[in-house]
Image 1: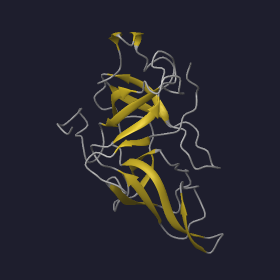
Image 2: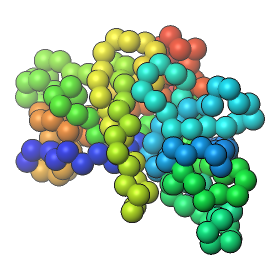
Image 3: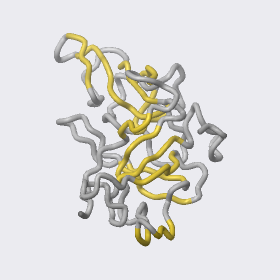
Length: 209
């Protein structure tokens, strides 16, 4: 069955050196004046002009990532109470927002590929080439304000060593499931961090598994 174009951001696949329930999750900060929404599963990056752990939604490029955003807590102006939310809507906070970010350097994530970039060419028994082991760039996509879910997906993969992710594998099971056909577009891909603040010097892998 052909895959469908239904991006969902970066979903935890392997916890790396961290264990449940946090999977090496760290607490960071979003400025209440940051009007850019951040959705669950979005890559985030440090705010370079500000110290003390501030983050914002990542822009595709070669900027070092802070990790993958998975939720936040803030004092809601409209509700007059502390709320926990799966995404940062870009407003409604009194004071800084407490953000939760998966930044384990060994963590791996499930994400949707696009076009034909991440396909296997050939059959599953005679693989002639793939993007496994190459570096990958993402696109931020369009998040869903109703569910808080990211719309990010992988955009391209090649030998650019400063890209933020490394392709670790392709999903091939269960047969017939959406995303499990690696011979068609929009298949699901397993990635790990490459250019991330706890992992890389911006020039490819640094020996962390």
